[in-house]
Amino acid sequence: MKKGTILIIDDELSVRESLAYFFQDEGYRVFTADNGEIGLELFSRERVDLVLTDLRMPRKDGIEVMTAIHEHSPDTPMVVVSGAGGKEDIIKALRMGAKDYITKPIDDLEMIHHIIRKALENKHLIEDNRRYRKQLEKSEIRYRTITEQIAEGIFTVDAQENLTFTNQAFCKMLGYSSKTLSNMNLRDLIPRDSFNIIEQQTDSRKRGLTSRYEIQMIDKEKNIVHVELACSPLLDDGNQYNGAITVVRDITKLIELRKQYQKFLKGQKNKEKGMLAICANCKSVRDKKAGWIQVEDFFADVVFSHGICPDCCEKLYPEFNFSELDEDDFDT
Image 1 (cartoon, rainbow, N blue to C red):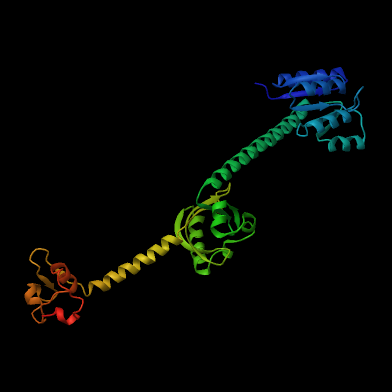
Image 2 (image 1 turned 90 degrees about the vertical axis):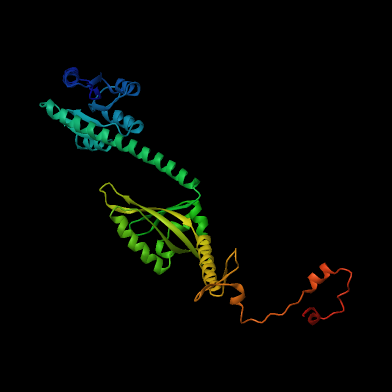
């Protein structure tokens, strides 16, 4: 199994071949070049994971090679193996990204192998981290796209209740811009009584629990907005509470309907106090004390007189002129 590709650039044949044979035996894919110019051609043509280079070489020296590689591929690890070069050359090599500087003659190939292995492991970690970041960026873009399309408000907060994200529906709900809200804390948007509820619910979220509850918020015009919050905790890599994501639903109209309904029920209770129950069949009237009573007995203490209303008179006797009569004339 190939462990990676190494490019060895050295004008000494014995050094070049001994390094090449050693790393090939260790399972690496190896390219060699006897000068810097050929080495750069191979680097541009092949997929190289690490470069081993001498400093003093014909046509292009090691510093020129490292400078060119660093410009085009700054993450490619390089190790200098050289018998020449003073303190300034070592400093230049390290500034160009050299992971180590090994002096000739080479006495311990296992020591070089250890340096190469660590350099490649570090390179793979950097590449994995970059891929992971790209995936996170794609996920964040997808997440933001989805949340912006949702009709209900969405916001996230950190562990101190600072707003870290708000979608357009939430901004519209309170009348603020996303930029303004990003500099605000939930305390700036919620009355004290409601924020006490927030703090109680945060204790639950710190235990990993989700919650749904109603509070009041204050919009840009200082109006009260009744909302229902559905909150879920956000945890860091150590499974520690790092904030929350919340879905917000404006229930201001619902609260008003609740109040109207309660008022209606209260009115119905008042009406029931003066309401009479009458049997649909025998027309008996229900008395709360005496039970069901015949209608004649129920109204026994009420004196009635017989008469006819003007509208009925006109319908029954259209030929008669009733316009000259008073209301009292219709009683008998």
